[in-house]
Length: 251
Image (cartoon, rainbow, N blue to C red):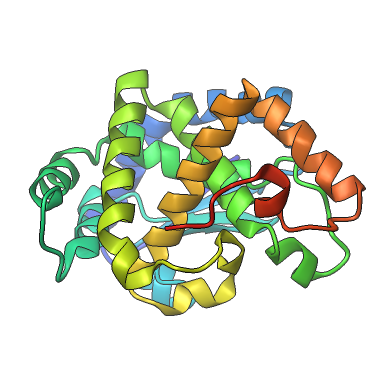
């Protein structure tokens, strides 16, 4: 996989090249795992390392600087950018847990956490996700895909301790943000999700991940969850995935 750079200065280029060199051995091992374990055959041709403004304003209107398509992954490797984005979830929040979350995001953004974001984007290319004939059918279960790729990316790159810690922070955030953004099905995750602020966007990601995490524990493994998912698709998607899996839609 080739690496490309969209930068505004020589300093930014040097920083991104250094990150790419650090990432390369672990990322290439992840790519092999995705091919062998998750049926990822048609992976993107390149990773485009881009600054926040370039990723979210010049190349796309998506406000989160990590996304993929069949040709390339766009990703900002600057830990300060991700720290700022995640801390913005706390705007206006009060109560127990806020200090813990803030302390966590101020210290957690290391190479492993950044790589888990890349792992998330690359896992989208698993052929374990059925191809649907129309975008409406695919979007009906996007919470599942987003939750599972977040699980896969984290499980590959994070230690057990870091994985559990991240899950705890996500649970705290979902609990704190539920009064503001909750009260609707997981199935509502879709294109309109990205029209909100960072807190509303990540509220959907975190509760999707937590649902996926529960499913993996219930079924005993990722493959087993996907078998059930594929059965749902093969039977014609007669109920929502929430109904199929018997997942509580709230918060």
